[in-house]
Amino acid sequence: MVEQTAIGTSASARWDEHAAWRGPVRRAELPGGQQVWVVTGYDEVAALLADPRLSLDKKHASGGYAGFALPPALDRNLLNMDGDEHGRIRKLAGPAFSRRSSGSLRAAVARTAEEVFAALPESGSETIDLLAELCVPVPAMVIGELLGIPADLHSRLRDAATAMVTFDAASKASGQRLVAAIGWLTATFASLVHSKRVNPGDDLLSGWVQARDVEETLTEDELVSLAFLMMLAGLENAAHMCSNMIAALLTSDDAPETLAAWPTSRGLLMERANPLPFAIRRFAVTDLILGDHTISTGDTVLLTLFGADSDPARNGRPSLMFGRGPHYCLGAQAADLVIDAVVPQLFVRHPRAQLAVAESALEYRTSWRSHGLVTLPVLLTPH
Image (cartoon, rainbow, N blue to C red):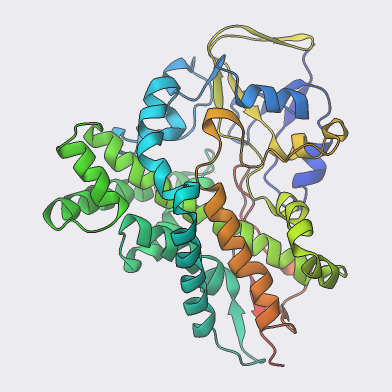
């Protein structure tokens, strides 16, 4: 008999829950009732992240959980592709995040962080939501500048991302929010593409429009989907990684030691603050035997990053939080730069910063997909 596990939505229990799932694979139920397989061991997750027997393409799903039902203009992105198709699109997105571009990217992050820090009020009596005032603006402005997306869209983009990752299949209101968010995202990114056709600039999106219209290396849906994924993924993950890390430091007695040893301590802090418990869902393209179980063709597989990184069998090997193999996160370098420009610098500039509420009052989003804070209320007490 296959052991059945319920996947929870509590951020406070995220590590304990995943760390308790020992053994290579188990059957699990998502909060919406869908059945999936969960793979937990470090060795198994590391191998399957790069295994072609698992596909990201929804065409291989056999009717179980397949993620969001997006329109083609948002769905033809890197998280739904494999093989040569994936490589073709990734080749267009990759140069902006390559080692060759690291200097200009680092400069853009540093400049943006300086601007955002300078705009923060410093009154010790005024509560500031650091998620909204620091952790979101820095990655949003950096990715927005790279893509050429106007700053006045950043707030709506964040709201749309929240509607997606907190979607509850059992809630009619949640479904309505998701539909509205997807509709707005589709129209907004289609409009952005049109504006770049009319008035191209020195940005990635203008370059991708050129690749679509002149070089014909992209379809229209692939073009819009690529812009959508780069902006939403870059904003969502970096913002919540930063806020989770800051919250952890503000509630830790070891924060001074962690900050003093930042180059060596940051990795473990990032792992513990990672908002994403699972890698993107995958589908078996053939019957797959793991341990004593057979994953049938078309079944949905979730690879738990928390479970893998907390596995004692990991034995000092690299974290899998950014994935492995052909789907390794394109924005990993950018996320590292944003984290280094935001997290330790907050405590350099505001060494007496403190939570404005009790740790137990911190509210996390109710979601099994992403464990990010709703707000991060802080007092930036002056020197």
